[in-house]
Amino acid sequence: MPQTDAGSKDGVMVVKMHTATDVGLQRKNNEDSCAIVDESGLCVVADGMGGHLGGEIASNIAIETVTEAFKARGREGDERKDAELLTKCIKNANKEIYRRGNADPALKNMGTTIVAVALGRDYVVTANVGDSRIYRLRGGELAQISEDHSWVGELRKKNLISEEDARSHPLKNIITRALGMEPGVEVDVKWDKIKTGDIYLLCSDGLTDLVTDGEILKVMVKHGHNLEAMAAELIEQANAGGGTDNITVGLCLVE
Image 1 (cartoon, rainbow, N blue to C red):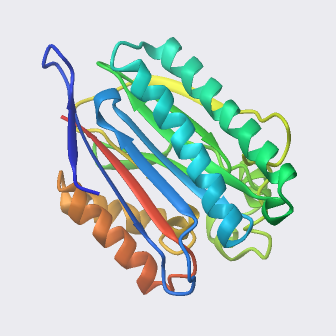
Image 2 (cartoon, rainbow, N blue to C red):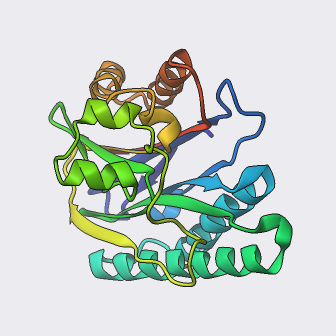
């Protein structure tokens, strides 16, 4: 997807956004979905599960539900309103995925993760369900903003295993929370102030299972504000590591 700009109406802040997705080297189909709503400062990534048909449908429902809500919102939100809107539309997506999965035997047990970033005039709102991730690069330091809703994520949270052990853990793909699994879902939503130069990375686990945080940091620092080159090399690194899953990245730069 081409890089886009989303500027505040008074020129205080400009956001550049870019998304890229790749099927990887071992999958026949891409169950990931991603989108940008540049007029609303929104970027969203979803990683579908439940087989080719179900995974694609689940991730598409999630993306379409969130993007349609933010297209209607425009850029007139604030932190609390955007947090409420993200929570509401993600929960609505969950209901629709759950309904479709239970109505059609071919779609039974379909689901998806989701991560979303909404950037306002001086703030960012982040939301996530599942083990897709949101990172922030600020001042040369990379921090994971989202919390993994996975079996291994829970072990890491309790400091029972190391990050290195988590990457090779036999249960690393067991998700504890996702859209479509239950009639209702809890959405992690938070907000913070943004700073010029901040870069937010949204990604599916097709990246983070194969590329370490340290390697991600090196690629992001290397490419500076060139989001297209940054996304391309992140995907290249994941494929170099085996490309065992679909790989999707979304990047948001505050200028």
